[in-house]
Image (tube, rainbow, N blue to C red; front, side, top):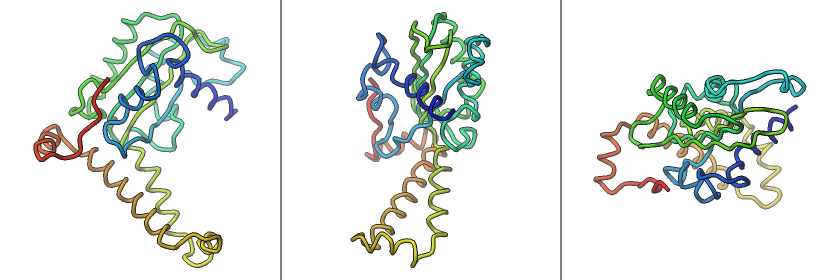
Length: 224
């Protein structure tokens, strides 16, 4: 049930807005913590556990299982594989009765075992929150929001699909309504620039970012 998946994921993302908590207490703080560079603001949401709607009450999950599933490509709500990129920032919202120390230990374990998938030049780029109130029908759940360079896969597919669109027939439906052909060219150029920017930061090292700061380049948002 796609609607159910979307609803539980959005419920998890907004948990800290609706219940007491420190992480991302408002949308501005979410943006500050998750968006290191203004253009790179496209997130990959995920949810765990993923199970049939009727089977949720019969399946108990542990913090370790939730953490492992949360970073699994099969649990992502975006059509791209996070293993093909690197995480710039991550926010994880756990719900249910659980130990905060266990959550921190599991999240640290994931980062240590998969350090190559996290950029090293953004310190403390993984934020975690725990809410005692579980979602309806579950004892424990976890919602994931990742800002990963892997999302460029999605934009590449869109760009390739646009390239294969017949240049005369399809755009004419829009130009006939008042759009200019240059708007299509500009949109394609902007998307290709975005893909290049994601790739640039995927390949960047701490030394590269230090050189960029020294030259007065684009600055990341301050952490809050």
